[in-house]
Length: 189
Image (cartoon, rainbow, N blue to C red):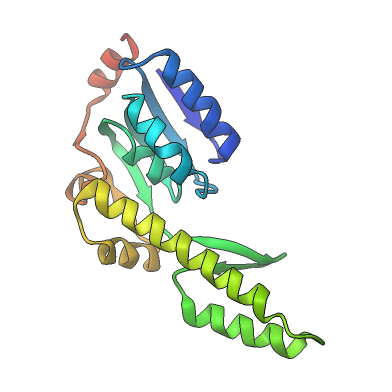
């Protein structure tokens, strides 16, 4: 069993993938992560899914939910939690901008235009396009993996929702909740 703790990053996911490919079909990944970046998942998700790992959620937040959803079998412990929030990007130090909150992004754009001595329209257009693509990918991925509408996940993200393990089953994020005894049996694999 592999324990994935800490932030999600491209480097850490690539290392996890290497480990999973060495243990095809028998690997279990326990996820205890506050999330992190997710832009590399569109590139690495197919290979992660093909590795055939079992994902076991513990504390799963933000981009770590993508990792949970890639497991061929998705499990959770009874006390597991799944935290959703709007996908964020750092606009400038101390100011995170969510990609789900378009109105706020437009306010930021107007503020930037007022403060700038020269127009930054091309930068702003690229920034909005990147945010929109990221949001669409994340929501589409969750919808495909669970069979539920992306609007449901958008509402969870906007509400900063925390789901229990049982709720995660209802939302299709995990297939079932396992006991501590079942977890010990998985460790022995």
